[in-house]
Structures are given as structure tokens and as C-alpha cells.
Length: 623
Image (cartoon, rainbow, N blue to C red):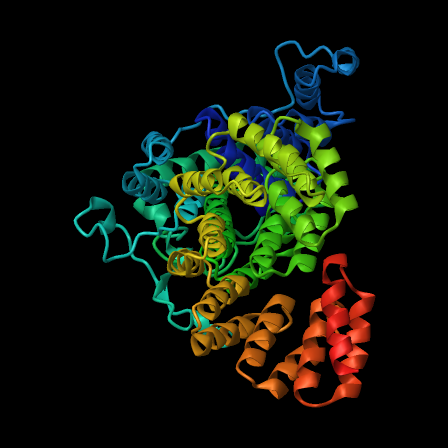
């Protein structure tokens, strides 16, 4: 027989999803539907909820892909509606014709009574409204307070993380919600990353998803009572009909009070009688009720623990403490880890560390599991852009166009495809279209800014970067874009300022530290530049740009042997004309003509047309 705790877990998650749908918090419904599908991958009802969440988010292709070939009657209706939205009326008619006469009944067991957590929902919606209206502090307060009443609001938590603010004890000290907050702090220090050594105290999200919320919130208590009644109605009668009796209800019953942590998952010892249903009628209703209650509490704790783990990983990711983020995600069970959302988040962590190959692999896994994914696909396309994988990027853009040709993620991916082909005007058209579709999609402004830079239209580039920052002041890519713009204009102090703003947000990205070093080098502050290159190299020792810039600086400082060390290591990673050419110059300075001529000859093998005369002149000087 299926474990009763699993049935109760299903009921609990279903109630949370129903509450989310009734409150029109479809992103919240999607998150918990994904968790439900991870726990119960073969459940048709779980797939129905996931497809429904995508449908309400107007991602009809995803709905169709999830439900195709379904035999579940409610799913058939939703599948037909998705086909209609996709203008595939022939397929819709086929599905409609396959639907049995449903009359007044469905296969979905809707709860007779669901209490919508009004105060929590209103606070969450207010927070979303304040956020769009750029009243960030009010939004933070609303999101935080909504979680105090109902910690199953992932939407509130997700937006708090994106805003970069989980409330500290030192902030909003006079605000009423701080009476209920009791954050646990831990110190973060990465021994492998010097530029993170000054990290301040960071609050853990474990208290946001604390089991203590159950006894503090009347909304949580009401939800639990609903789940208990539903469990008694749906689970226990089935067990009794199968001639199964409850012989033991709890272990250490007296010690497992509501105000204590659950020490053990309550278990049911099942005894099969040989005498048909004899003895089932003697099961103590009070024991049955108590067993259900304890099982529900156990499941609530299980879900909260899951949220704390995913929430911790997501918080660290948004704070760009990327190695720590990966550690949290890796603690997830395989069924929860191998989901599209989590794999995409792991890919993003690798992207922000400039581990493009690893990031690509995780995105590939995510798309293999969920080929209908749209979220985060603009980031996948930028990874392929960095890796110069033109064919793969074109194929991704093609697939996303099939899914939703008007989605900003699709338009940005198509734009990146044109950008890689150096067709900057076509890329700009795509990014502008993405902005028209979703004016709050800040990443499109940043991509457009870089294309304007490529076209030497510096004024429009600056405007795009600043618009992106207005939408999200923690979007470090836009700060970097402004820094690069001023670097191009030789306004090095402004460039340094904006690079540092970007680096302060994302201290795990080695390239941002390297760019600050490049600015110092241009300002003839060679020692400061070398310090920044060393810091960048400690984050990513194999990054080609960092090693080359450091070798170039060491050459200027006449530290030839150290520079040569960097280049000898680098030539095994990449084969590029500039690497061999700089090595030739160093060998010439050291009086090693033989090796100088050898590497100059190798440089010719990777020569670009505009560099041909420079290499030939260097060879002539050493003959």
C-alpha cells in the first residue's frame, strides 16, 4: 500500500496550489506544481496542475507539451483549450471528440472548503504592485510580512531575493513585523576567493520557512485543519476498506507536542487480518485523527525544509555567492534537483562564474527534461554567444520561436544569434521588439546597449544601460556596460566607478575585477592593476583574458620571466596570435632569438589579416 504520508503530502501541496490559483498567483502555483511533479512524477493530476499554471501564464505551448497524449479527462479539456490558443483547431477538435461525457462530475477532487489566506495574499499582491511602481521599501515590507503569515508564498520570497533584501534586525526596527522575526545569522567566508573575504553577516532564509510559523500563524493553522480533514476523508477510509488496521499511531506520542519540533516521522504499522474486514470497525477514531494530524505536521515540515533549501540556494545566487549557492542546490534530493527550474538556477550560478561550458551542460539537461522551457533561455543564448557556438545558438532560437515567437526570451535569443553573426542592426531590431513586448524586461535594454556600442552609437548605448539600471539597480551587466562605454571614451575615472559598482554586486565574477585592473593600467597605476589581476586570477586561474592582461602588464613592468610563465601556461589553453606574438617579444627582450623566431612563426599560423605586417616586421628585426 502507498505510504499514507505520501498521500497527505500530495493533499498538502494540492491545497497550496489551489490557494495560489484562486488568488491568481500563477507563478506561485507553478513553483509548487513543479515540486508536486518532482515528488509524484507519474501523477496525472500533478501534471494537470503544472500545465494549468503554464496556461494561466499564457505559455500555451508548454501546456500542450505537458498534456499531449493524456488520458486524464480534465487534462483533455485543458489540452484542447491550449490547442485553440495556438490556433491548431484541428488538433483541438480531435481532443474534444475524445473527451467522454463528463456531465456534472470530474476526476479532480476539489476540496469542499479552502480558506484563502486573505491577509497574506493581499500583502503579496501589494508588494508586487509597489515593486512595479518602484516603491521598493514598501514592497520589501509587504513581501516580508506576507511570508510571516503564510510561508508558502514563494512569489514573495523570490521577489525579496531579486530585490536583494531579506530584512535585517537593524532595519525597520519600529516596524511591527520585526516582532515576529528571529533571523539566524551565519558568516560567509570563501577561502578560495579573497575578494569575498569582507562579506558582512548574511541572514539565513531558514527562519523564513521555519516550522515555528505553524503555531504563530492562524492562516497556517486553518490550512493544516483543512488538510487533516481532507486526509481523514480521502486516505483513512481507503485503508480501512482494504482490510488494514491502524495498530500503532505514534511513537513517543506524549513528547511530540505542536510547539516542539517533530523528532521522527510518524509511522503507521499496518496489520493485515485474515478475517476479511473484521476488526476495522474497532479502530479508535481519536487515534486515527491524531495520526492524521501528526502526519500532516510532518509533511508541512518536509515542505518547509525543502523551501528552506531551495530558498537558501536562490538567495545565495541572487547575492552572487555562487559557490555557496551550488552547495545548497546539491543538497537537494535527486528528484527535486533534476527539475527544469533547479537545473537552470545551477546553470546561472556557473554562468556568473564564467564557467560557460558547465553552464551549457546544465541548460542542456534542463531542456532535455522540459523542452518547453522559456524562462532563463535568454541566459542560455548568451552562454552560446560567449562560446561562439553559432549552430547551437541558431537551433535554440529556432526552437524558442516555435514555442513562442513573441516572448522576450525568444526575441533576445534571436537577437544574440544575429549579434554573433555581427549583424548588429538586425540584433537591435530583436532587442527593441523584446522591450516593446515587455517594457520591464531589463536584460533586453542591456543587450541593446551593447549592440549600440558595437555600432559606435554611444549616446543611445548609455541611455539603454541607464534604463536597465532604473528597472533593476542590481543588474550588474548594465553597470559593466556603462563602465565599458566610459573606458572606450577614455574617461577612466568614470569607467572605474561603474566597474566597481558592478564588481560590488557580483564579487564572484573574475572578469569584473580584471576590467578594473585594465582601467588602472590605462591610468599608469601598474601596481594597483597587478593587484586586481592577481585577485581576478585567484577566482579563475584558467581565464585566458586575465592571464593575458597580467602577462602584458608584467612585460610593461619589465618582469619578463614572470610574464613568460603566464604565457607558457596560456598557450596550452588557447592558440591565438596575440599570445605567441607577446611571447616572441619577451624572448627577444631576453636575447633568446631562436625561441623568438619559433613563436613568431607559430603566431603566423593563427594570424589575422590586419596583424600580418606587424608579425613580419617583428620577424625581420630578429633575423
